[in-house]
Length: 415
Ligand SMILES: Cc1cc2nc3c(=O)[nH]c(=O)nc-3n(C[C@H](O)[C@H](O)[C@H](O)COP(=O)(O)OP(=O)(O)OC[C@H]3O[C@@H](n4cnc5c(N)ncnc54)[C@H](O)[C@@H]3O)c2cc1C
Image 1 (cartoon, helix red, strand yellow):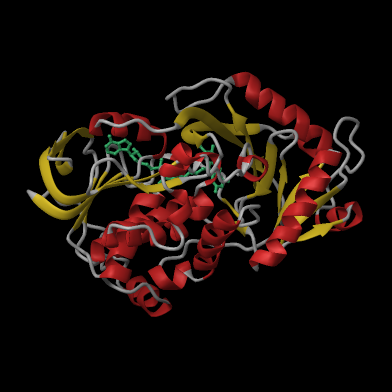
Image 2 (tube, helix red, strand yellow):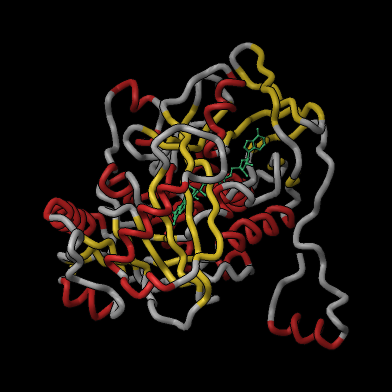
């Protein structure tokens, strides 16, 4: 892989940019791999990357039914934070956040990580207590957050209206090193690094069946033929229930549409990320100047990559009360993804009833921020066949044993 550098840019400028290579190869599938990963979203690609980097396993195929990063990874609002309540969540999300800090250097690819700070607004007394509790928990977990007053919120976000009629701002949970990153670049950076390690990323290749014998996966049926493997990792977010069904087991999760929208670009007016969970709305300003707005999940299960109109209306109506200046903005685009939501709003990184088959799903509305930590932990699970410290609590068995990791406050609707 050719390194990207200022020197390379200067050299290419002199020869009219004729020397750049493709960022990743697009090979035909081989007959067999040590590991097949289904799903070239951020989590699947990060799993492949860490299999190679941390465990030296590079005979890996990442199989993708569409284009890489075209699922939720390329559809989210890119918020990164680790201010979760429960210890296992704080551990994996903080691992991920810390890996984001050096991701551009690690991948030699600019993922535009912007630790601009994230505020979660408290707009009810219940939220005040909830976030103050989270701030205390984070202090014990070594996650750098703190409770801030309405005056401090106003200082950080001058455009905010603290005294909205329905949703006055009573304070907030502030994580100064939370922020955003460019979602496509995260997928592209991992894909380039995986391809450079000799891994095959096979796009336009849908898995349509799973072959097994004697309680173990032997390979997958795809639209590009059968591919045999020693180990299988399913990392397909909203499609997890369908993949599990092919493998003969069921998952305790539901798939629901979740949507986002962006405004026309305007001059810089807000340099932090603001989340308002009571109203199911959150907003940041992109580098292009668009206000990036996300809402809550639809109230019904579905696989349409859209979202219902009344949700946009409710989200915008509530945000206008908190940010009156957005009332005159034109909205440019709206889109949706399919998120996989578990009962306790925590992910599943687990062994499955099939001995050599592993699953990573259930990140729901908030898995972009977890990509590098999840990849790190999932690679360990796949390589060793047993959960490591970061995945131990996230197994499927927790639903049977009633050991929920309840993040409904931190992750129920927020991202
Ligand atoms: C509107 C929206 C806003 C969000 N905002 C945030 C946010 O601000 N912060 C945050 O942390 N998270 C956010 N999320 C959640 C986040 O996007 C997801 O949790 C995360 O991207 C999941 O990544 P993934 O790699 O698991 O899934 P995906 O990126 O969806 O990748 C799964 C891939 O599997 C492929 N696939 C599925 N079935 C098959 C098959 N049979 N064969 C082959 N390939 C298959 C799909 O095509 C897809 O590319 C948001 C999500 C949405 C939809």
